[in-house]
Length: 419
Ligand code: HEM
Image (tube, rainbow, N blue to C red; front, side, top):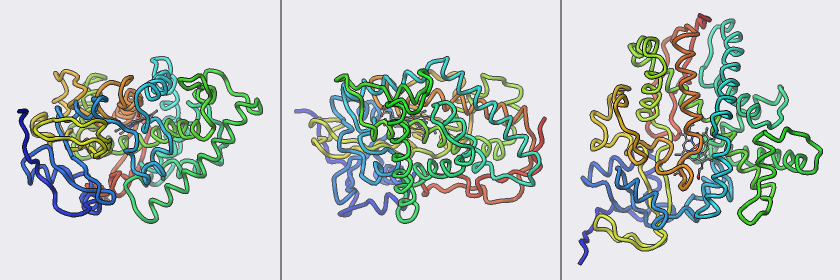
């Protein structure tokens, strides 16, 4: 007889409200209470969900014979963060085929191209910042990354539209963990952006808008699915947003990077002296230490037994991303900020999962991870070598409940100077 045991069960008919109230710590709090990396809860109208964390859990979560994405993403996430019929909701061949498209934008050449755009935009922005009394760093970076995202993808945008589109793109990721007004702002923004992009895609297809063939917009507009058919304009719009939105979302990590240098002043000197190698260690630790993407949700594809528990077809499985990145079995002193922990660390796709785990091409791991790391390295270099600024007194702490989290002040900087 295979080994079976009763796993801990979180009491309550529906614990969605508790999850929203405890945010990044919901799973960790219960893992501590139960002394297990595996427990059962009920969410989204009382449906059974098994919460898991740790390296072995990540392996199971990314085993596509056991786990699927179809029918997993809650409606409120599809209406804001993902969009309907997005790559995040696909499995098997259909998923792999579409993933190839995303990965085709992540070549060295394309990444160099977008890095050059970012460096130029930072330089242009600096001219503006030096004459301002103060800047809210996060707000500036949201607009800056919007410009970068549009230029790189080739989606045309007028100068006077940038602020509006930046706010709309920000609303898509800012609303994901929200209820009420913030949620509705995300939904409305998604509708507006999808309709606008749909028109652009139609114009590309019927020749009313000429865009270079090597742009991401062109490639997406003419992408054929595994049956050799064009996607409908709505889905193309969703997938173009799957590039624009997360590029703007990197503003959260860039703000946490600036915060890390403020909270740990010795990092500035180490970054100056350590060159690109130390930048890499620093960037990885920022992505591990600070809260961003809290957890992932999927469904059991076929019944299976793991760790003494019967996973039943159709049940939700929730992987604790934040908790795995702070798991004491994986990380020594996980709540200490220490870039050095990455110096001799072997790459392991199941332990360090700020942007998902497993394989990029076969699974759902974030295709934008290399781009994100590049952007963060560019910012680290910019902060320590190209600019000086002061951080006045402000509320720079960040919430562990609000998703996504961010330093409350958005990080105010004064006396910005070019070095
Ligand atoms: C801001 C930093 C980012 C974070 C924290 C982040 C995080 C994530 C996470 C956690 C996933 C889910 C992995 C899974 O479902 O197993 C994901 C998927 C995805 N990300 Fe990112 N991401 C970031 C940046 C980017 C960028 C820059 C792009 C594109 C340029 C991007 C495009 C995507 C896409 C298309 C998916 C779906 C992949 C799939 O389902 O196969 N992300 N990301």
